[in-house]
Amino acid sequence: TDLDGTIIGSANQLPLYVPFRDRIADLRRRHGAVWAVCTGRSLSEFRDYFTPMRMMGAAPDFVIARHAYIYSLSRFGYIPHLLWNAQIRYILWVSHLSIHRAVEEWHEMVSHFSKGVTTVKKGRDRLWLRFDSEEAASAVAALLKEKVRPYHHLQVFKYLKEIDVRPVPFTKGLALSELAHHLGVDAGNILAIGNGHNDISMLDGRMAKMMGCPGNSEAEVKDVVHRANGHLATGTGGKSLLSSP
Image 1: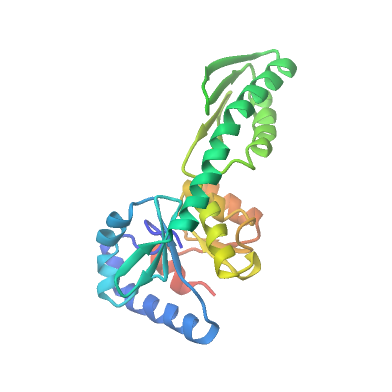
Image 2: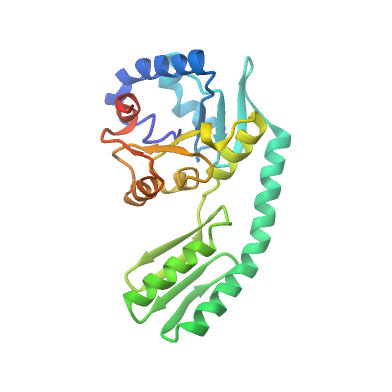
C-alpha cells in the first residue's frame, strides 16, 4: 500500500485505523499475508507520519522508503536490507546510464518523422517537445509511452501540443518486484494499492496482478488501474480499504 492519501489521510479517518489493523491481522493469520508500505518519505519521516496508526497497534512487515529502499520490521525497529538495496541502487544506476542514449535516440526519431516539432528542452534525462497540432502530439506521446516502459523513473506527460518526458520517482514498482523476489512471492499473489502518480509503476499490472486505488486517486492512476482490470474504490483513503471486497 501507498501511505499518504491511501492508508493515512485526514484526521477524521482515525476511527478507521483499528478495523484496518484487524483486517491486516486477519489476512496474516488466515493467509500468511505480508504487508509492505511503499512511500516516498524517508524512514524517519515514515515513523513520524505513521505514529497514529502505530499507536493503534498496526505495523507493516516491510517499509519501502524514498520510493525504492527496503526495510523490514524487527524487535529493534525497521532495519535496512543492505544487499537488496545495493541491488536496487545498481539497477537504477544502470538505468540512468542508458537513459541519456535513449533520449538522444528518441529526439532524433521524432525530429525525422515529425517536421512540425520544436525542441523546448533536451537534457540527459529530459525531453520537452512542442508540436504544430494536438493530433501529432498525441501520436508521439503514445509512441514514447511505450519507449519509456523499461525505464523505472521516466514518465511521459502531455498537455495540448506539448510533450514532456522527464524523471519522476517511479521506482516503487521496482522495489516491490525486488521485495517479492526475495520473499518468493509471484506477481499473481500481490495486491498493490495507491493513489498518486508515483504509485503507477506498481499499479499497471506488471509487478502486481491485483491492484486497486481509492476514490481520491489522480485521474491517470484511475485510468491505469481500470486498464489493468483493477478495483476502483468509491471511498477515499482508509475508508476505501475497508469498504472494498
